[in-house]
Length: 295
Ligand SMILES: C[S@@+](CC[C@H](N)C(=O)[O-])C[C@H]1O[C@@H](n2cnc3c(N)ncnc32)[C@H](O)[C@@H]1O
Image: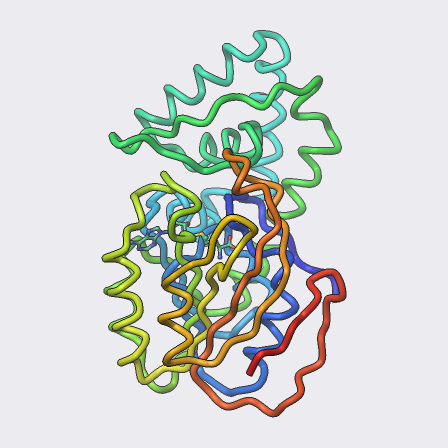
């Protein structure tokens, strides 16, 4: 099945891992799908659970999806908005991008958030210590072409349908609150910022966050999958070694194209940790990911 692409982009987006996460999650049953680190939402919108709690500490992501949920943003509204703002951008050039960025940093409009997210450098979602969006413009001739606007509005239409057809709750909250609320009927998909790799999502991600996450996952009655990185050509992730003391693991070779530093753009071994039994062997859905089973 074709992967659903959401209208919002962020570094560490799991589009390529969706088939594997879907396959692993399908090996067990649950009532409610929970994501403490929902980001773009690509995983939830492809799993398409009937019931979900989708959380993030970034208030702009949550405000955007709530606006889609309550109809403040529809494909038609977004189309008109992007056409108008795209026209201003082509007339006034990149100065207009920075005008919208200043406006967003004052008013926090979800439509401006969409505009910036789809016009900024490399689809990065980065904020400074004052919580202000600070990603530069991605120069491109005719940035908001008709085809690009149509693509974005179709992506909004797809997620709008998913949100309207199912029972989804979007909440801006810390992962500790989200994971603590999970019961044995829930399934958690945890995709925290990759420790020591990406900075400045909305807040920093530290070793103490990682230890809190480990402790909460050891205690949770819910089933879960945790995404993290295992190693790259430069070094390995010590926390992944800790996780492997307690949980099962699938590993993949993966290449990220989005990232500021050279290291972030290199290939790496990525891991899915999980806490439930699954029949062996599991077939590999995605040849490019070169699934290496290490159960
Ligand atoms: C790797 S991204 C998630 C990507 C997502 N799975 C996707 O495919 O688009 C990590 C997310 O965690 C969020 N985050 C960072 N610290 C957090 C915290 N303490 N509590 C909840 N969310 C947090 C970030 O805002 C970011 O959206």
